[in-house]
Length: 157
Image 1 (cartoon, helix red, strand yellow):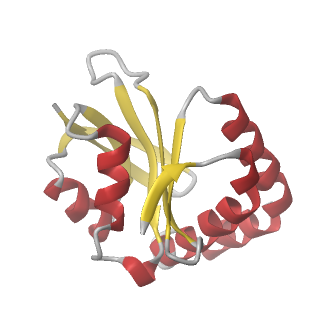
Image 2 (cartoon, helix red, strand yellow):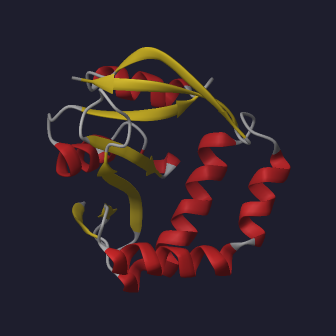
Image 3 (cartoon, one colour):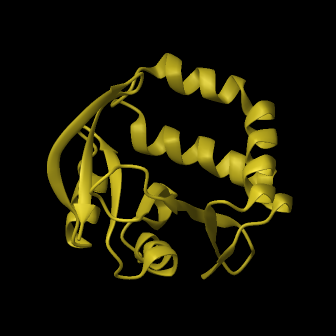
């Protein structure tokens, strides 16, 4: 397994990965119609990923197996909330088949190391909460409601 910076050429495979990992992580946590609606927008998601990857204002890393199949990704950018760390983990997802193998840790380490950072995690997403807690993140008591459900902010200082 290797971690590298994503490129615009990764947009289609990254979109498919993104759709797959959302289904794996969120089935039963968010309404099925939201997951189906994301799949219906696949083509526009590919274009969005191309734009994000070409823009370069955020860091997009992917984990690839020995056959170059994407196994996970992370998106990291500048923090936007006053009084919080300068880094925000906007996304970190891995395929269910590699849960517990160190892929998520490798992505997080490559993206932010042990730097202070913050992120939002969906209520009830125990796997993610346990992972981030193990990486030194703690709830700070702040929540927000999104179409997918309630999210809790976690911070590592």
